[in-house]
Length: 174
Image (tube, rainbow, N blue to C red; front, side, top):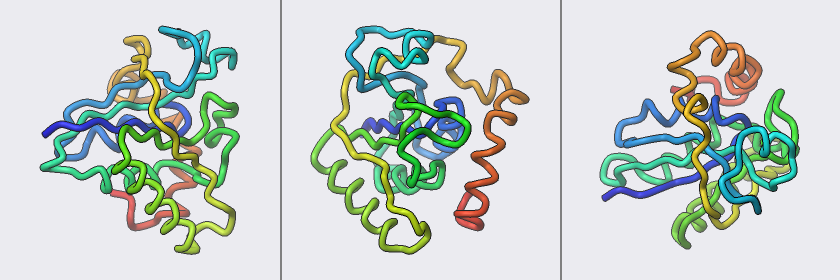
């Protein structure tokens, strides 16, 4: 059966590849969610006036990959201690959020967040929020599959994130 997950973790360009390459993933779409403007554009979201957060919407086959596994992958892509953006991307539109679509997703996300906090991997408090999903608006076509279309620009955009993740997750990143 297909399900949906929505995660925000900074620039959506860097959030596609880690999910896109997993078995059971049907699609990963860059977009905007959580704001008050219908059908926002990238320029509008970037202005910090719409209330939206850059996010990815993942359609997946839950018989092949679980929501729990997606949440685990999510943590390994973000700095969950930084509420003001992610890496070089700063501002409310880059904040880390797990958007849940039902109570089961909410429970899984909250349990996972508590386990991460208790693990001692991060000295600081885990500040990633867990919020109900809002309308998800797909971003413009040029933002979709950015890592495939613009590999050199993607690599540059992913540089700081990659360095941080290697230090925090070492062998666990696949």
